[in-house]
Length: 46
Image 1 (cartoon, one colour):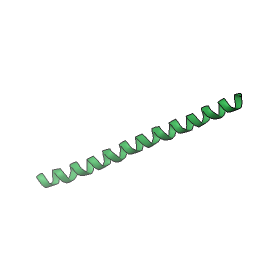
Image 2: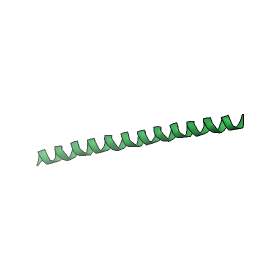
Image 3: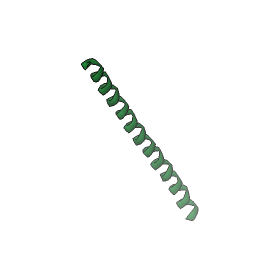
Image 4: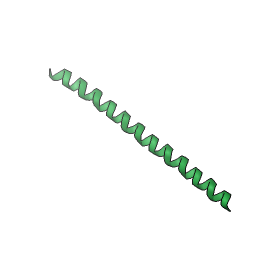
């Protein structure tokens, strides 16, 4: 019984880390894309 709980908590830990990592990665990609858009936009205006 304790082995199953340990396995589930380990799985939950791995899933949580991968979800957090994925969210951070997506945020990073969005920020990079926005920076690129802002760069091209400011170049057009100048």
